[in-house]
Length: 223
Image (tube, rainbow, N blue to C red; front, top):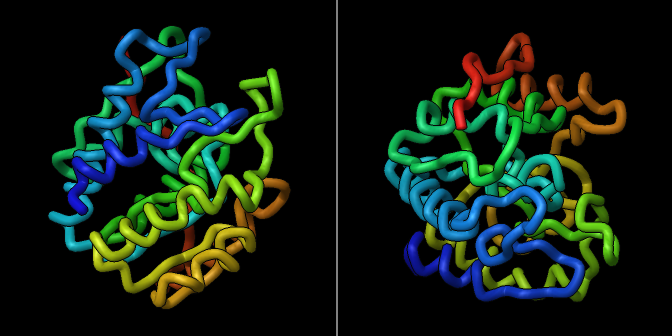
């Protein structure tokens, strides 16, 4: 599988009460061509990872309505899109929604940690879509086991395509899942719900860092 065929395969998955940013259009926030732009971002992101030679995934749980639902990029909100091509050269990302930039606290923590690394990892999720409550698209919920099964094969393809040998699980949900891929799995606390200090300490331990300070994008997006 190639980055292009992987992005197309992601777009074929449709599930009730799940927003697929590579196929679905948000009538409230999205621009007219938002799904196509997010597919392009995903494809070029994977190509950039291959060019960098990064063989590590940071794996979260699923997309949130303030972050990945809008960007199509795991653990990334709109406030950090200006940094994306700097960390992942060649990636073609753009804001796909109308209105003001929306920030997410988890993304600030993740990108604060990334800024300390020589080679950034692939940011990904166990369930790479946004599961929400019925008739409440701007809510977050955990995916079901049946929903997760629909992406198991694609996640396996991703690991093989990128020759992943290390998965850093962001939280216990990801830690239990990641063991099936044959890569070395390490876990850090998810930064949400009071886990910020432990998350930073975990990343420092794994990468031999002394300190992590969250950072925001240095300049606004103009759209």
